[in-house]
Each structure stands twice: as structure tokens, then as C-alpha cells.
Length: 338
Image 1 (tube, rainbow, N blue to C red):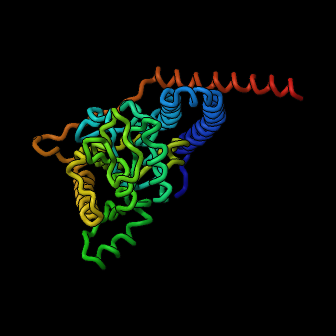
Image 2: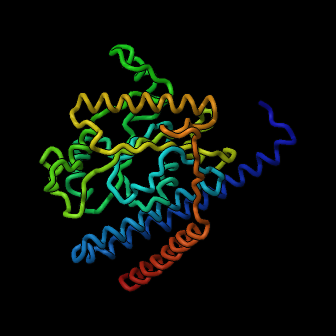
Image 3: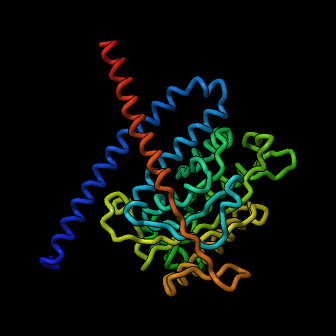
């Protein structure tokens, strides 16, 4: 399509804005990530003396890094509207988020959603054996609370055809807005983290004992991400900001872990049911522009998710000041040594 004279100034400004955003984000990463690494290195003695405090501080710094990524989309006008149950009520408990996966922007959207939930780092590992080992050795010892999991195992556009062929062959639900989930990672997480006995030993009996204050994994948060017109945002759009301001909609449902089966076949069936429900939720959203009301409610209630401009300014300032400080420290020692 040929560009008109009226469109030329707008496209020119869009290009300039994208280049400016890209330059800022490169600078942001060049100061924030090395500074984070330097702080983690310098705090290693604290890790030996007080491991719990070390991981608490590291979790805060990591959350600030995620906040910087969230701010990139926020200032491009990519905001989030939350629906369904209020997950702030369980933010201090251990939980797993089961999320449908459409594009790379899903992760950025979740970074924004979790900023006001008081959480630390989330983990996702595709290799099941490494995931199991990580959960046993690191997850609870670092006082992590939530795990974000994409059970579909890939983007919707890449897995839809394969998933539909598998469903047709095995007489399973035929889905178009999501794909059939895989249960492997979910089963490993539940077996490693669910407390089944009063003495606190986790399911399976082969993971480390729970901390005396831990109740184990308590909730499954079924999370459904919907984009207007079913057009997902990718990471390039999030960074460059060339797409017009867009509201991404996120729907939550909370399931107590006691209602989730742990046996493989039953768990797989339970996951299929959740994704069939996601299919219905997304179909309703694409038809009406809103999610349906929660069970027991007549009207659907949405909540606009916001980020504090002052908080973003403070963490960005801290990042750049830290980068400047570490640069001078490293430069000083370099001149002293060489």
C-alpha cells in the first residue's frame, strides 16, 4: 500500500520514536543488568551469613528489573485490564499460574501484572528433570512464592495445527483459541511442592522438607490473556512501541490445591477442562469485548492495572546511578592494577 503525504509525518515520527525507545532500552539494559550482577557478587558474604536475607534482597532487585521491562510497555500505552478473582488476596501464599501462550509479549504482560502483587522471581524451565532439581534445591530455600507456567509448551500460532490433529486423533476437545496443555511440568511442580502431610513433607516424598513456616503450594491461578481482535503483542512491539496504545485483558480464577488431582491421568483431564474453559472465555471475549461474569455474579467487573510513575522514576534513577557508580569503581581498580 502506497504511503500518502498525510501519513508521511506520522510514519516519520513513529520511526524516530521507535529509535529513541530502542536506544533508551539498550542503555537501560547496559546499566541495570551489570549493576544487578555487581550487587549480587558484592553481597555473596551475606549469602553465607544470612541466606534468607540475601535472597530477599536479590528478589527485590530482580523485581525492579522486571519493573523496568514493564515500564517500557506502560509508556507506550500498552496497559492491562484485570478480570475475575482478585489474586492479591493470595499473593503471600505459594501458587502456580497456568497461562495460555500466544506471543512473546505474554511474558511482558505478566511482568506488568505482577508488579503490584508483592512477588519475587518466577521460574519456567522446559527441561523437566532440571525443573525438578531446581524446585528441590532452590525454589523454597530462596523463599519464592509463585511459579508462572505455560502448559501449552509453545505459541498458539505454532502449536494450534498439531494440537488440533492430536485432539481429532484421540477424541479430545477441538480448540482454536488455545491448544491442549501438556501435563509434565505441572505434575513435577505439584509433586515437588504440594504439602500432603501435617508434618510438612511434600508430595512424592523425594523433595527437601518444607520450611517450618511454609504451608506448601496452596493455589492454582488459572490465568487467561486476551488481546483485542486476537492480535497478540510481541516483544518487538513492546520495545519499539510502534503499535497504537492497546489494552490487554487478563482473567484470573483461583483453585485451592486440595481440589487439584495429582495422579497423571486425572491431572491431565483436569488441565484439559481448564483449557476448554479458557477457550470459552476467549470466545466470549472476542465476541463481546469483555469476559463473562464470574460464577455467582450478574456482571463482570474489571480492574485497571496501573504502575506508579514515581516508582518507575525511582527504580530507573537507581539503575542509572548504580551503573555510574559501578563504572567508576571498576575504572578505579583497573587503573590501580594496570
